[in-house]
Image 1 (cartoon, rainbow, N blue to C red):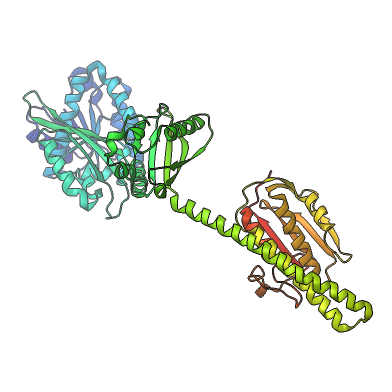
Image 2 (cartoon, helix red, strand yellow; image 1 turned 120 degrees about the vertical axis):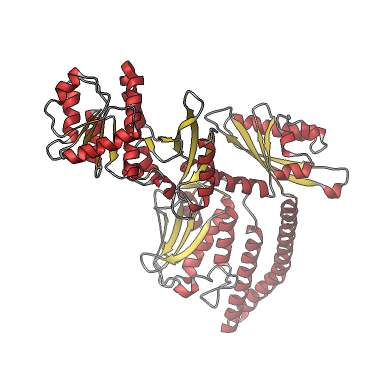
Length: 591
């Protein structure tokens, strides 16, 4: 074995230190490159140790010279500091190993172990050296950290560059201090890791997960598998393994835990069926209602609900048809009315079925069941109230119109004999009462949701409504691109008639009413060029009884808002481009 350095004393000191620590080696030192190549050709040299920092006998130059001759002798380089550039150049030149320069006892111990390992590897490699090189190349393209230490963890034998990416620490620091990697572990996990190290050194395989970061907060997770390596006598001489970054997987697991918590604690029942209508999952809500553990549902056919007395055969068939609809890419909402022996205990369920597509397995169907009994009761009660309200409004309208008609007829007769300003005031009062009755009757009939819709072309509806309203020589301008929406044609006409009448009655000097489409939303607007609505009043214009004039009923815009809400539209009041009033409608359903 040859030790090369410019300084003969330094070379002799290194040789002496290695000779004392590796007595089986015949160590010689040299301070000049002359004759080395001849020595290599004439004698068997098992290893060359060269100082990279020597000005005249640069170890890197020695390595390149030796490799250029084709002599496959291990070369171990040492230097005061290893830069990325220097490491790359040494690897490219075919270095066997490299260490930090340290002439102290620990440094010489480390150098001796590296030399012995390089010689052993070279002797065992023989014609397989190229395989070793390929494995080294492979280690540099993997995202996993590959590592090997001595059994006592005091010497790093190998680590690839993935270590720097995951740990955020340099390989040089690890070379200098093989336990430096422990400093990058979350303090809360260090006891776990130290225990795994002890088990691995004692001959056990290890498989652990822990956090890599110096702070207490979550940053990065890794999975480590390690194996002991034994010599011919069975003693553990080295430990090796890999580290894989699990951060992304851990983040997904945390997300899944949150979703699982939501699903398991919801008041809705959650089911997953396969294509044969067999359960593959139910949440805790389903298990509690049926008093059957969740695992017991797996593989059971939907018919088990009938066996348990929960659903009838007809109700199960309804769900199966819904699952068939899902298989045909049609979303299904299944309504179940459960009819027990006691009529007062009828329960109503809504089961929403959605396709659950999978890229690594069969498609399935996920179902969400909700008890809507109270909602159905409220809807039916609301329907009854609305029916009573409309009936009441019709009766009141009929009963009020009779005396109004009598009063109006008597007034007309009286005016034939004598005309007076008093009679004109009475006529205006009667007209106002007639308008109030019409508006009240309209309000009573516009409540509730729209259930039956048809295509309603807005431009045609606007033209029709314009012909039924006294417009006082105002003009109507409609956008030719007005959409055709889904709605109740009668209520949509009432909406526009009230908007037009409101603009005529309260628009001041308005001369034009414009109906157009909203550019950035599905919707439309009705605007005028009159006096507009003051900004403080825009929040209350839809309230009952609001009116900007003494002769208004205060119900015109209330009716507009009722009709919009019945269709599920959003309505808002703002200022038009001409300074008048502008009423906007958004969220419409297009035909």
